Image (cartoon, rainbow, N blue to C red; front, side):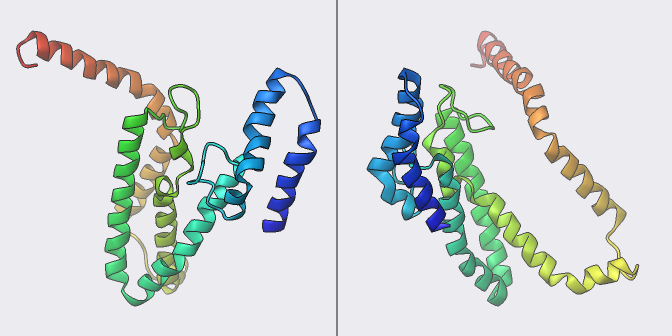
Length: 211
């Protein structure tokens, strides 16, 4: 990926600057794309652009490459732990996932980030690019891969009807999956009513002497 990324950086600082003109082009392209490549090209090549000047990334979409590489470098440690000490590693993964969720909750509360990571002032916050804001789904994927590896024989038995999950587990699993797919709709449907209920309780409690 490095040769392609390097070529894209060269194109941005050489050809792209000559592909348009005007005040909007100056702001959207020169300031946001070309100048970061001139000043911080090395962060992109080292794949640390999601932490070092994350709001001035040379190739804007390359932040994902940095996150992906950083998690890739960590993955052997997790996989080795699952191989040698699976129970301890399971506890570690669950704890790390919980910590990650708490970090995201605190960060979103302090910076007023919406579920789609757009800041209240319509600018993408630096935390959008941080690996520690995105590693929880990766850990879930690691666990899934390990479970699939460990249950290869059992899943073969399921195919031949020799073993089955309980209907309760299967039903709950599908209901949970469906609920997760409509979480955005649930958020937009409930966020204002729940916020209003919270404000209403504050007012009621205060005027009733419980504030």
